[in-house]
Amino acid sequence: MTSMEPKAQVEVGVLTDRAIRRARENGELWVEPFDAALVRPAALSLRLGHEAFTLMTTGPVDVADRSTHPELILKEPDARGRLVVEPGEVVLAPTLEKIGLSENLAGLVDGTSDYARLGISVVLCGQVSPGFGRDTGAVLTLEIVNHLRHPVLLYPGTRICNLMLFASSGSELPYGDLPHNYSSDHSVVASRLADHVRHN
Image 1: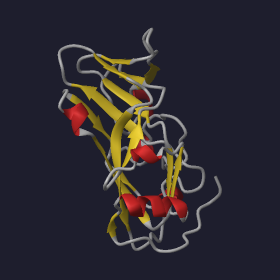
Image 2 (image 1 turned 180 degrees about the horizontal axis):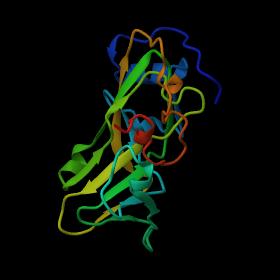
Image 3 (image 1 turned 135 degrees about the horizontal axis):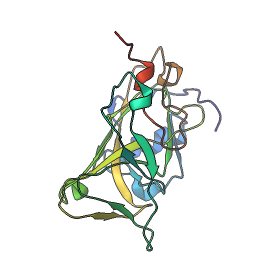
Image 4 (image 1 turned 60 degrees about the vertical axis):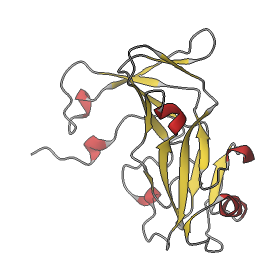
């Protein structure tokens, strides 16, 4: 993927299906792999990637001390290729798609009601800043939590969240130019919060 150069300003406000397709055609939005069937009336659905990690702690977590942060433990799929999420477990998993936004687009990510109705939370920080993934594309890392009393079986490659896109006035400092960002991640990486928090 080459660096994005904004071409024409996209429509103002939330991008609907036609505007999403136009944004992709004119280079404001980059999605790989792209499946036209995932374009929703006012969002782009994203699919669950094929790797997942559980968070393992051995003691209290000091957000400013990277050595205390949870370890990312790879979760192997079951015999049928499913991701098993245990009760109360927190799993980090990437989207199957890598995305890139120009400085003229911003996004919000949320889980779908299908999963919420089963007691499964699929969340992120929510905001996808202008310029995210603009140079090489990047996955979004999802936090998946099972609120039920029994394991949940998820299927990599299936729709798991929605990315709602908004036209912006253009960012002076794109997200990818900020220090310690996640704009070029092609897989799940550990938290970089310790890079932002100073010890007192």
